[in-house]
Length: 467
Image (cartoon, rainbow, N blue to C red; front, top):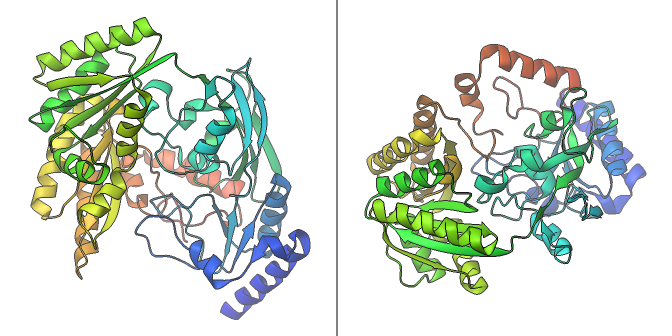
């Protein structure tokens, strides 16, 4: 059987090279190793080859050939996923879309654009800089738009602009048999047909390979102000965040850093005038009068909750430094404990349960004896725990145990095992706890219907699926 599989791979690689050319198909060890994993702690698996697509047609030909040869594949973008989504099937194909970076169209009057799936948010916004528009979904890393769609990404600005799900109008995707499917369009709403666009959003490459995306764009705000406020206790910080939301303040960003994360960020990002205390980072956007009104309301809430000062400013450089520190939280954690690695997990609960969850997680961390800073998008009830894994024989096992305890605590409070990282390999075991059995059966039926040979990212997302 193994010899037969190797023969199929050799024949497939030869067919891919005949269709795409040697320059787009690599079997080099270094290239294969780079594509054997994402940024999570899941064991790498070496693909038999890496295919670099440049167009939807390249993807369609590659997927059709994989299907004909019964060789599985996994799509690869920037490789930043944390739950093993991009880890390829052992000996299969890693289909790299990172060269698909074209902006295909921009429609300023309608505030939308169409892009290839391999473009990053940063490159897209650089291209849009003279239009007065921007794309707001900001997961923090150099993720590709296609990868963000596949994992249903969120980020710091979701409290104001929504997740990637709310900002996609349509898609082009390649199905398992190589057919190209176009969904949605440019209109802001439609009541026709099944919502195939959002079926693919969050499907993690198991139902199709996304190659083009029609995106909603938003006007660059006229005024932007950022603020920092610190608290003596974590519960006060969380309660303040909940008050801000319940008062209906249309805040742009609302981020929480606990005392440990603040200590790491102060050291790494050289933040001055701040202490290692639970802290909220806030951003206000809109017209000048609207921003001033938002600041006034939030300042009063902070005062009622015992916040330690309320420092806000509009200087672009100071705002950039603040959010740069937030985006560098992961690297700050790695620098905080040299020699350690980091396992990042996320969970989400209804806003009203957020305080109970975070306080409980802090107790779990203390009991574990590990260092695990907390940083989160508290505006939508989502937060991350960056578990620092000690370089000891039992370090990874202890980290996994804490990760599982955090997730189960969130599920017990009516939450989800992942607010934005997705399922991949890492969270499959929790799907049976979170989802209705009939719903899981429907998911499996969809998978078998759209991918009868099981070639698209096998072993991901659905519990019980073989890899």
